[in-house]
Length: 87
Picture 1 (cartoon, rainbow, N blue to C red):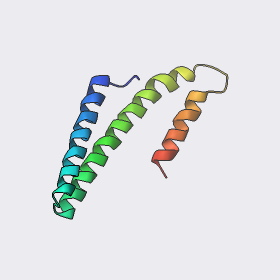
Picture 2: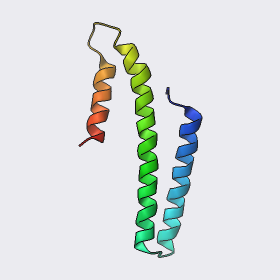
Picture 3: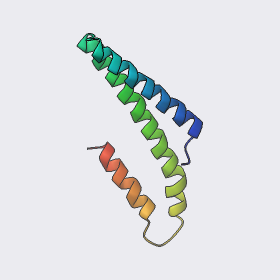
Picture 4: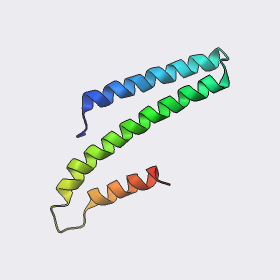
């Protein structure tokens, strides 16, 4: 992985902590809107992490793959990932 590994790990650990907090909120029967807000925050964090990983992939693996005349599986792989993100 070419992304800033320490930053990614830190963000994923934060998301894991958020999910643990959300589970606790559900178990405690907390207000639905508060739970929804926490879910949105966690989704946003994970989306940002995914974006950073994909940017690093495109800047490194895909860029390296573009320096060849042969069919490029890295480009096709990146396009498939983008299709999943942009419905």
